[in-house]
Image 1 (cartoon, rainbow, N blue to C red):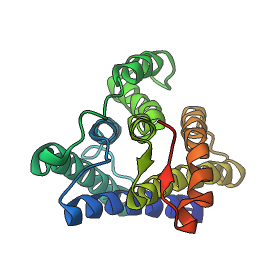
Image 2: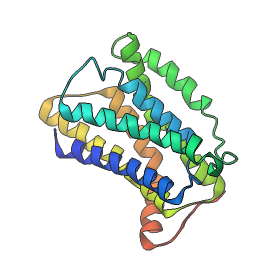
Image 3: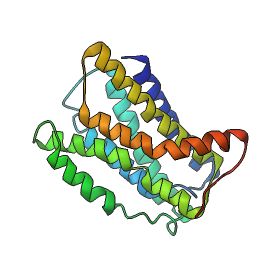
Image 4: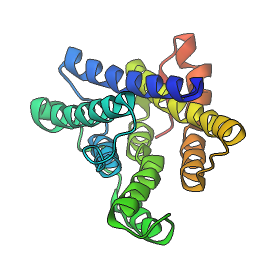
Length: 212
């Protein structure tokens, strides 16, 4: 494992922990898109169907279990434990606009036309756009809490680090995964505008505000 993948996994894990702690400590999920979190839970579920059938390493297995557990814990807190604080009025992104094309692409572009492979491809494409309901919600409300922006930054950093991971693996291992790379580039591009605002505003102590 190279340093970029490890750093990416850590950044991903930190992002989810930041979000969970934010919800738990404030007893509120205000400003958090439940739809994005459901999509992420779906991403991990369809990607890790091989959890009990394919063993790669202890690290790989542990990370799969952790991401699955944390993603469903987040969904539980939003829709069950603190559902009275969930801002459903502003979490209105039409997820079918993401799911339909992602499902179609998964059947058209995959490495093997088998259920597990198609679902893995589905998870890769879906992860690239799963954050869109959250970004849409921030745009609609016009602002985001600092802790939410830290979560988004770590999530975007994870994907950017994975781009370097793929470059590393191509040059040093001869490994090239076109599906994962294209999806990763798309996901990173979605964060570019947010990265700029994060550096110019949030890191200077200003509240992130966007035009509604």
